[in-house]
Figure (spheres, protein in one colour):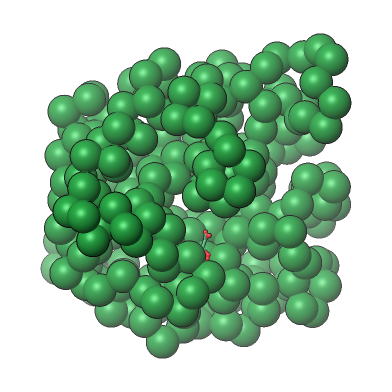
Amino acid sequence: MVRDDKLLIANWKMNLPGEGIEDWLRLVKADRTTSVAVAPPFPYLARVAIADSGLTLVAQNCSAEREGAFTGEVSAAMLADVGVAWVILGHSERRHLFGESPQLIGRKVHAAQQVGLVPVVCVGEKEEIREEGKTDVVLQEQLAAALEHADRGMPLIVAYEPVWAIGTGKTATAEIILETHEMILAKLDESGFRDAPLLYGGSVTPDNAGELAALNGVSGFLVGGASLFSDRFLRITQALEQVALKSSKKG
Ligand code: PGA
């Protein structure tokens, strides 16, 4: 995995796609060249795995613990066992609705890498943090804790998802994405994660995907709401593919 890879993750959260799982997978599979990954809720992971769609299978969370008396938890090894390849960690809904601390997220990143899962580490600031001018400090703290025990020799993906942009229809401006991605990428380089792709997430839609995908430092998207219908999601994959095609011609 390298930073130039174009990646797209459909994060269904606690929803199922409008047309049903198998139809969504069939339609998305038939029409894509970008690397597409899908994160269904836990109980459907195996069903997506056996549908043999060729899409990368992603879990939305995992436990920091290996095994034991942890009711309701799912270990990274169990996810790997059912065919999961990547796991989203530190999503803002986990941080803010379920009280996950930066340290816990760091332990989860370690647990995931230990069994060969690729962590998709999400970082993002709340609106008041941006207004107070503290975005860089907060994001750097989140990153430092998430990467504290991470293995630099193993693949890792980061997603910048401003909390105020998630599910709100209020996408970050190009200017905000450019400057924030530049800061995060510098931090990743400095910490030895030079190959880590950096995704953007937060109200990505078919209408803004082309413009956002063309921004420097954007390797792709983590898509929530707009991933729930294959036609909307496919328009996003196509926008990303066009940008990838243009840059490969230039390069
Ligand atoms: P959204 O969610 O696309 O619905 O804003 C993004 C995410 O939470 O990953």
